[in-house]
Length: 308
Image (cartoon, rainbow, N blue to C red; front, side, top):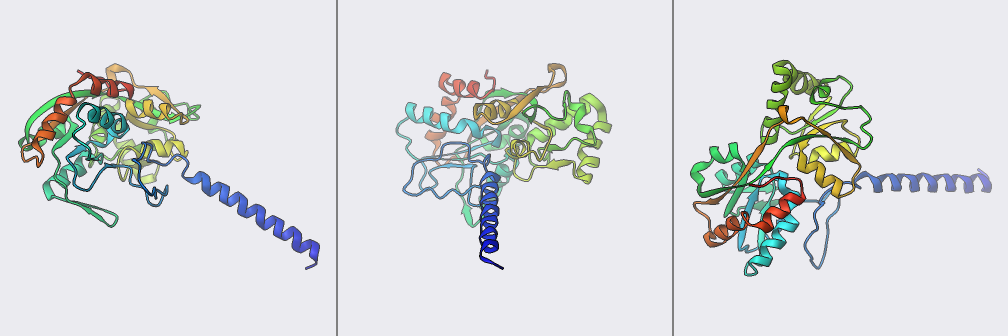
């Protein structure tokens, strides 16, 4: 190989490496955490590798521990800042926003392992949908309703598949991102809408036939996955909470909303409870009181929720 050929080869190799690096740099451009991380001496978050978006705040010696159903992760920055402003005595707060079913198992079993980390904090406060809270009623000394939500269909910007309604999710060429009903309350709510619109046949098509052929993807973590699959064009449509669409638009991510009419939609009710065995009972009371305040309601309104 002469000098000119070697030179051209080096240029081509360099170009390929550059293109690959640029492609890899884009692989995780929409990855969480979407919230603002707390300040620290070292920030070692690596998208797609070391990334724990559903654990918030101070895990060492917390003065308050809150378990929130995962669909409220977008509220945490503003909510915790507003709570600390009102109650400056609480400097160290630890919050988990995992699926409510996973949090319930954590409460029952006393611990959870994520990667190489084991967490055995007992929550002072637990917040989830009405159904889950009623199932766990014996765990609480007090409960309060604090927010409502409804469903929407999230699609990529431009809505390339022309999704107009829930029934379109049954089409063979439509890839669906679907929250897993096994541990996601929203999953069961969405299935109830399938039944309301198209009976068991629509449910079976989306939740069995399309799952088996790979055109319906059931989430492995929680509905945080659905926007990611839309953003990375791995799905054409995703039934989500309306708050999810509002939040992605606030982030200026390329998504659109397909509205589900009120007559076929559902209204989710969120309830927060003080744990009977709360290790920090006064903090639990202060936080539940705060969730009824105008400051907390303003945060939820910002992200597309309704409040009492």
